[in-house]
Length: 239
Image (cartoon, rainbow, N blue to C red; front, side):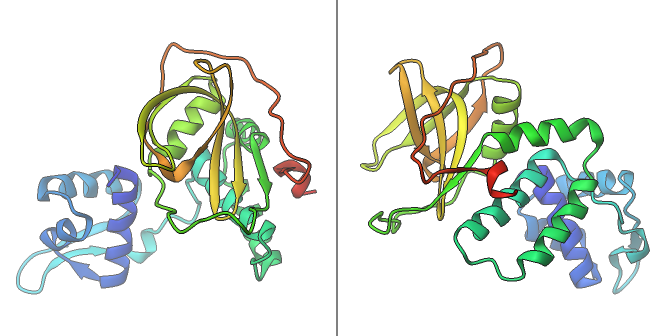
């Protein structure tokens, strides 16, 4: 579990249980006792008041008054929220969409002004469409949790992405491509990239990508991606 997800899990557990022990937290998040103690120290530095009660019935407690009232969200986290809501809207299964939009607007205001440009650049790479009813989605899997962080570097800094890819027949290859767009055909998500080895665009199902990393020292130019007429850029969907 990545450290950010682990920190969130620790805070949720403390809020839910009221009091718990370090050993119980370690079991909950799947980490060592030493790692959890280090995580608690980091959370305290971020402003969470986590009290240690000694004696029988003691443990760790989170002071609810210390909860952060301002969302400290990264660009990828806000991006993930936006594209998830947009994908649901495009699929026609987003009830309470007005409330969702109001909530997202408040979250976007929490993004530092110097990150707004990055968020807009990220969203400019996003396209949404409808999946063919004939498409088989019985084998859909989970996405690698490191994918969005790698995308942030790859798309915003124009660095190539390297990852392991498993195709429809289960054949695994190591790929290095230039990320150009993201395509959502709910429930399938695709990375659209230029493949220098094949000198053409390729679509990679994100749930078939593993161990993605941005390749330092690489750079590439933006290319116009040829989409079908029924594929809509995100910025047009939100107007």
